[in-house]
Amino acid sequence: MTANMGTIDKWLRIVVGVLLIALALFDVIGWWGYIGIIPLATGLINFCPVYKLIGFDTRGAGPDKSGDGPV
Image (cartoon, rainbow, N blue to C red; front, side, top):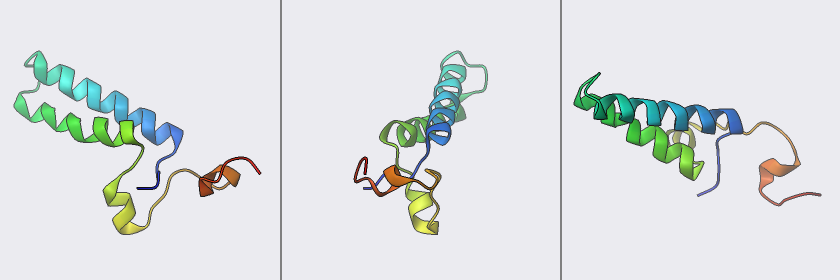
């Protein structure tokens, strides 16, 4: 599994996931809010399977995109 999410994408997923789960826990939006587990999990592991399927990557261009580290 190679990371395919940039920093902004990662943090947005984590925040949205936690928010949805919290709203579900406090019964504000109902049980469907537990769907927030998906964006939370993908944000924490820095990998989105759907992005992999469609060939999408939000990391941007640069030397660290290859995963090899600094040049």
